[in-house]
Image (cartoon, rainbow over all chains, first blue to last red; front, side, top):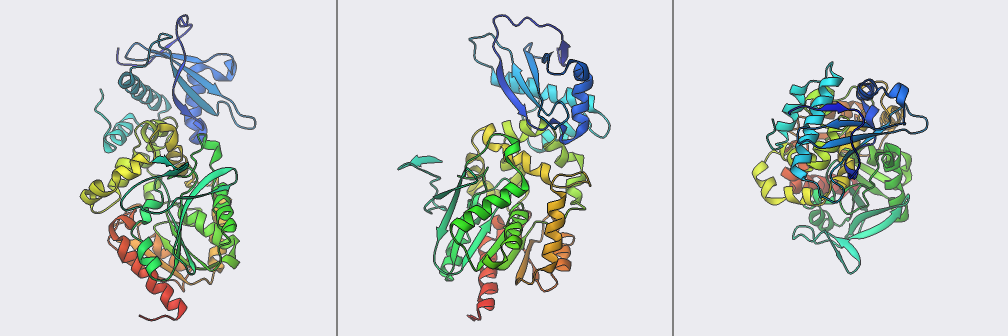
Length: 131
Length: 307
């Protein structure tokens, strides 16, 4: 599997939430907020449930959307890995999963935001090579 | 970075200075305070800390000046808030104001670079009774237009985009590492001498939050946060009669001198310069001693001292 897969009702029993990435200001560029609203129907589901995705490593991630009074929803996102409850994270795997998730997000935001530019930015800052 | 005798310090042969701390706006703010005389306040920006001015301290104190180098809250040995909402332009100006008022700084020369520009000039223009001169390097003080560099998706806007910023600049420390490396002229020397210092002072993703929060405060259109503050900065700066010197890196590609130093010269026609030195955006890394010498000569002239 090389892509992000949105999943409904994942099995959460026996897992824990491990915080791996926090974004306090998802609407800095509003098209990013709009992508998550579209992708997870947040205009109707609101705060009722997180979004879940499965990443290339097989790990499920929960996307928890944050609301702040006076700001459009969502205002922030917390991304949690859902590993087996008592197992440590495999950091390189998580890092690679997050990169694929960013690619998925940029492709979904679209318009002037291009995956090629994300890849080029990653290369400029010499991230480890990823697929 | 270590705790020694209860005090946080960063032991380094080029940074032998006694760390000092004040509480400002509820945050722990670190600074060094060396020498005696009229104060020179050296202000860094993103993602640096006081270490950027390590080659300034001895020449300026030897020139009969008191040198104060604060670390912005969020950088260096200052407290590093972990929520983006803790960082606002006005808040950072107020942090600097809180520190310099606690130290009862008067007759100060404000040396401003990068985000040390809007914050240091913000302090100077709102506390004119405490400031006697300005030195301005590779920064800006107006709302629009942004630098061409700041309009582009690749790499600037992509680097701090939602979730991308916390990933690249947070998890991978891209700005303090590769970002600074790309913004000096002598990269080999920078890598050998100082790159690890800028990386190590931001050891964890959570400690790097301001590296992607500050880029989001650069106005790129009329809807930007902070636009009114930048309008005020430009308006007030145009009225300033403070002796001013402009110093720019000849090779600066971010705030190129032909655009940015020229606009400061238009705002402050009486300013000396721009004095061009070898340097990209972090010109202090390539020309630290030379810039310190220029500041000494500029202030000697104001003081009527002649070498």
